[in-house]
Figure 1 (cartoon, one colour):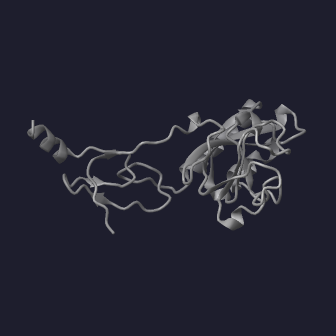
Figure 2 (figure 1 turned 45 degrees about the vertical axis):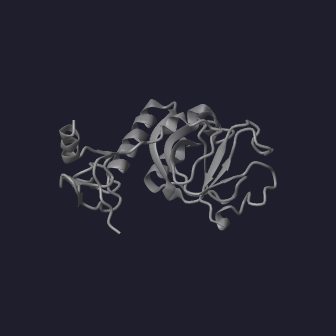
Figure 3 (figure 1 turned 30 degrees about the horizontal axis):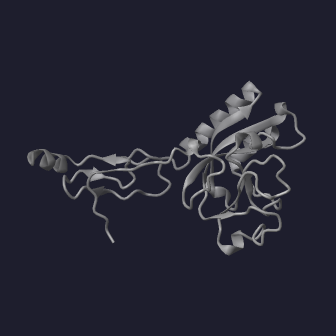
Length: 218
């Protein structure tokens, strides 16, 4: 079914302002963090995350909206050897796990969920800090957008350069109309009032004809 467009503006969530106790909403994208050892940081940027085989929430990539929690990892590692990535995570369908021995604690993905979420201060004994945690099943839902923590200035610069290169080369082209990076081909449409070429991914389209009609009625 074709969609008719004229004049719109999209509203985006301010992902950075979401509190850690706010439940991630299905289908949204959030800013999160992941801590790793500096020796594997370049491999992760180049090849993507590899899901852990186990853990408190089973298999998946463990991330958190709480940067201090992410900076704790890897555990038993000095700050000089740690790197914390800043991420954009498309959470998909989310399951809240808020107690020990939850029936879906390690089987949430088999029940159709993309992400498991442990709220802060849950009754889960494995999280001593009281900080929230997420486990994402599919690494493709996670994009690295920056370096939140790295004490080695040279390594930090190298990692940032790699991230910029990865993001630029992600698809190799951007949409001529909306200027956004194209993972898939964007449909080229026209405003059914002013006939201007538009893309449904445009954040805003001011329809000239509608504006003229509006002013003409005054």
